[in-house]
Image (tube, rainbow, N blue to C red):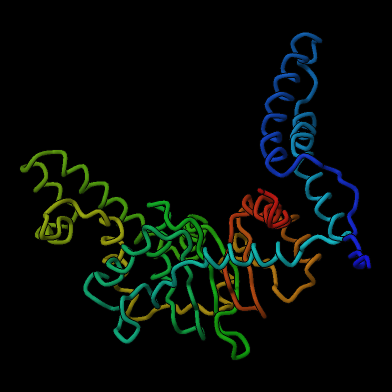
Length: 343
């Protein structure tokens, strides 16, 4: 007696029958060939005056055609559905991996200790850990955790060193901690802080000028150096400019001098809460985020349409991570491929 035959799984049309490896290898090859052909055509056919923008965009689209056909084949084989949930999960995981380093309150090393230390030494020591961070997370908490001039110190260090390149703000809202408020570049925040308070601008410019003078003195020899240090008002402060045990020039000289310059604000600080933050930074604060509870298709569509430099992710309003906008399409496309596509 013949055994009953198992019904074959439904398969859709094979839009790309050559496998994932061929699609991935062919895409950059097509891009190079099409660019060369277009460059030759412009010369031979006299098309130099034709705007290249739309042509190049079309070339990029055509070069990605094998990968898109591969995705369509995968969708058809699965009955017409694409793993949008898988793409959402992959992007959320990538964002969580870049969540960032939470900066201590007022960049002070210990929350229980007053940040009003001698010359901001503790704040500068805390800034050292941010040199390798991709994202700095500033949690305003209930509006009493951060001072305006201490945020200036953080942004000045990040803008000078180029790390971290982005600052994310969170706060407590309606009793829920860690709610996403927005993100911005440190250089933009630094500029807005100076525009908002002339006293902070004066302190920042004085500290920057002193640091430049110290670096000039360092290259001038012992006698000119001593004279310049006196003129800068830093006589007898070699421990600050050349801290032991190495006695080399302080790598955080600008921040150490700025912390010293703004230490007078510690007595009567301007606290930062959410309304104050929005008032100061609205022109440079990016407040859009992808909410995890949104429908998968709408969520992925919003992720791919967002042209921002960074895209923030939230779950019930709580900040969960951030990714560079340029990384989103690639991560989403890879997640849409079938698990055995590389076989």
